[in-house]
Image (tube, rainbow, N blue to C red; front, top):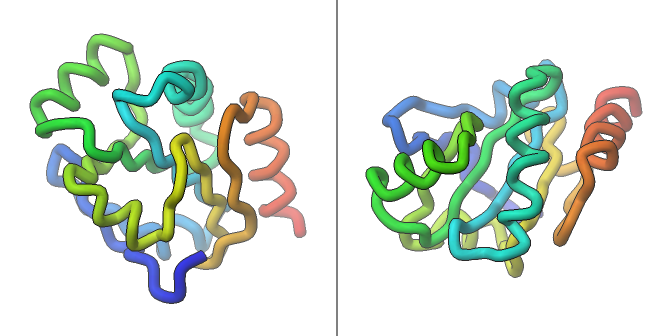
Length: 135
């Protein structure tokens, strides 16, 4: 976890997102991905399902994947409804010391409890969020 990660973000629709506040009540999943990432095309449907279940907050940060309009079209074409921040230049990803996509961070009380990369099945993400909530 970086020393001072950016926790106040704005999604591609212009809505404010405060990860510090979100992670106070429940562990929050932050998912870094790209529309150009072949592995992300496998993992993003599970993230969409997790987000739709609404048991835990989910914020996705898409890296270097075009304009807000291109992102909007991509999300619509794939039926994704998760909250998405458009990191057009990759600055947020760099700020969070990201190395690979997909990457996942679980925050609880503004602190990283877990960091993961690669293919993560839905059950694994649910378990990790639950563990972050309980312990």
